[in-house]
Length: 405
Image (cartoon, rainbow, N blue to C red; front, side):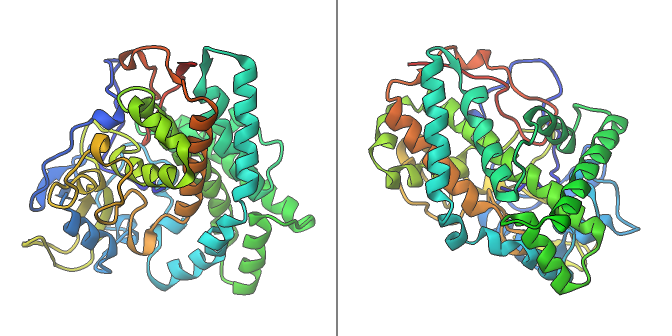
C-alpha cells in the first residue's frame, strides 16, 4: 500500500483519537488552495475523477518535488524523501527500476505464496488460542504476520522484529522523532540493507533480494544506493501498511462492524469483498493538516475546471476520493460485502501504483477469513476510546488491542 509523502502529520497531541473508520473527510469539490505544514502552498484535489488525473497525468510527477527549485514539503524528512528512491523517480528511469521488482508481485506470483501464508496464519491463530483470552491481537497476530511474510519473501530469516519496528517507525515519522534520530536510524537501516545485499551476492538464494541483484546486473545502470534503498523500502512497505490496515480493520470488525464477523468466516469470497471495502473506507492514517499523495506540476494543468500553474504542489486526497458520494453511495455497514462501485485509490494509481497491492490483498483476506472462522466469538475487550494508538507517524494503528472470545 502506498505510504508516499502526504500533506500530513499524524496526531501530535495526547487527546483521545477516534478509530480511523470514524474519521470525517473533506467534502469533495473543485481543487482548492491550502498549505502544507511547512507553509508551502498546495492545491488539494478531492474528487474521485480529479484524484485519478493527478495520479496518472504525466504533467504531474514525483521527481519535481525534489528539483533544486522545489519548495519544502516535509518538516522532518524521512525515508520517503530520498530523491533516488523508486517512489521519487518518474518516466523511463522509473519504469526501468520498477521492472527489477515487479515480477515478484504479479497476481500469479503472489498466488504461489497463498498456501504458505495460510499456514503462517493458522500457526499464529493456534498460538493465540493457546495463550488464551484475553490477548493482545496486535502482538500475537497483526504485527507478526506481515513481518513473517516479507521476511520469507526477501530471505530475511531471523529478522529482529523489535529492530525492524524501530527502523520502520523512524522511517515513517512525521512528528514522533527528531531529524537527528531519524537520520541515525536510517543510517543503521541502510547498513542493514547493504549487508543483506552483500550476503546475497556471496550466497544467492530463491528470494526477492537475489532476483533484484540479478535484474540489476542485467540492467547495468542501477546504482548501489538505489539497490539499498529498494531493499529497505520493500522491508518497510512490505509489512507496515499491511499491519496498519489489518489492525484498523479489526478495530472496526470487532466493534462497530461486529455483525459482519460471522459472514467473514463463511467463505474466502466474502472476505475478499470485505477486504476491498475496508481498504477503500478505512485510511492508513489521519492528519493534523491535509491528507494527500503529493505531486508537482511541470506545466499548467487543468484539473476539475481549475487551471493549476506549473511548479505547483498538488495533494491528491485519496481518502476523500474513496468515499466521494458521487461514486460511492453506501458505507461499511451497508456495502461491506458488495463489489466496489469504482476503483479505489488506497494503493494509488498510475505509474506509482503500489507494487505490493496483490500481496497486501492476499494477506488481509486470508487473515480476516481464517481468524473469523477459528474465533467466531472474538470481540474487543475494551471500549474503542481506550485504544492506545501509535502517534506521530504517516500511518496510525493500535499499539495494542485487547480481545476476548
